[in-house]
Image (cartoon, rainbow, N blue to C red; front, side, top):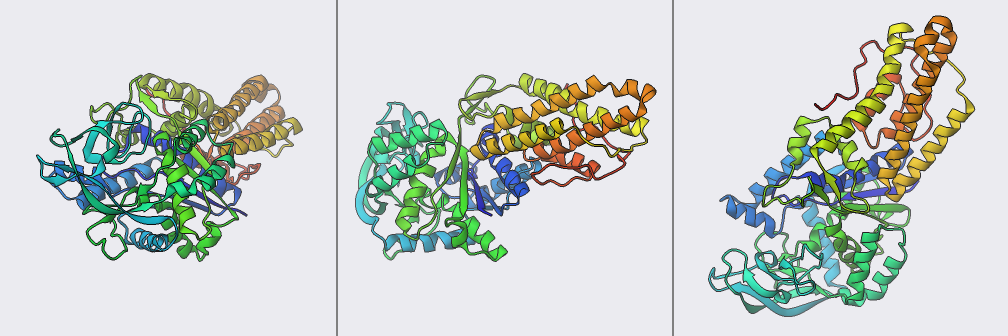
Length: 527
């Protein structure tokens, strides 16, 4: 049985999560729950990115410290993920001592290999502020696309930058033109790994189009070597003599969080880490499209340069963006819906349904309150909730809650078995929207079957047929709830408890003979 690693992107702990984060990360939980139901050993890991300039900027703005700021948002993230049903096996943080130790040991081996060298490079300095600037504190024009950018990455084209390549560079704090001095840094020679990275890309033709296009562009435009150290005072110490005043650059340690978190789980479970990061595994990485190069270029480069045969990513689940009422989400302009507010007010399965059914898998999609309400009321209340509640409430009211043992028609059994196969295959390929659509076709079939059999009539003139109809509908409900569990875990668990079924990825037989009288509605209308 293959080990499954599901790595969700690590959000910056410098501000609250918004709906864009939820849309990008939610597929990871679907994968984890699905593979657990199949019986695979699952390592679903993520954490809060607590280092880097965004944290120090926020701390300065609030007259606080980076550790206080990052801990505050880390706690908030944990609460939001729990409310929304994210079933992480370990959600940690880059400031965790176990992560720091893992990264330090990883870098020590890295420095002794053939892909790291010391270089003297330019360093941005603001004469007006009289301070050295990190890349994120440099603003100017992207040399690749000509858009306004920060010195670390261009949001417009996704290019990963170095501050000295930014055109018309200015200080983000005061707007003054910059001067550039010199400093010594360690560089990862990504350019030396071009053949390996080309083979890696060619070996994954099934990735999403944005992942293939971004990665191909980075390779075709010429791979650039990347600094893996920086002159910072917040981060992980560089484990090399002479670098005591520097830290490991954030991109060279946060992507290693997948490995550090997995290593913690391996120790807890008594499993060899190399078995999980070896051949008998499948690795999924789930994130937004702005993180593609970090998972298809940077992480593989670090793993290859490390030289210990660590497994490269298998599946890149890279989402496009989600907009809000037709406009790009902007936290600086307060044009966002914050995840904590959404989680506090609405049914978590209603939230999960919307962001999977409207997931930005192939193109940008939009969140609107009107559509959120409409889909909750029509699909969850009107279709699925209606099928469950009218079937089970009917059994309680007219059949004393009793579910008869019946022989289910072979065509219905075959329909369900095909549904398990198609939904499972689509989940494994990252086609979550299509998988959910398939399940709701099953919901519609169930409602059509109920209507055609008219149990409200047969309970009067043919009670045996009535009992059979309710038993078959209950069988359908048990299996549809099972199929929906990776997507809608809270409501599916309710149904499972009512019917005495197990949440395994196989056909479910109803094991209870009597429906509890206190069943409740699954979903409420949003008015």
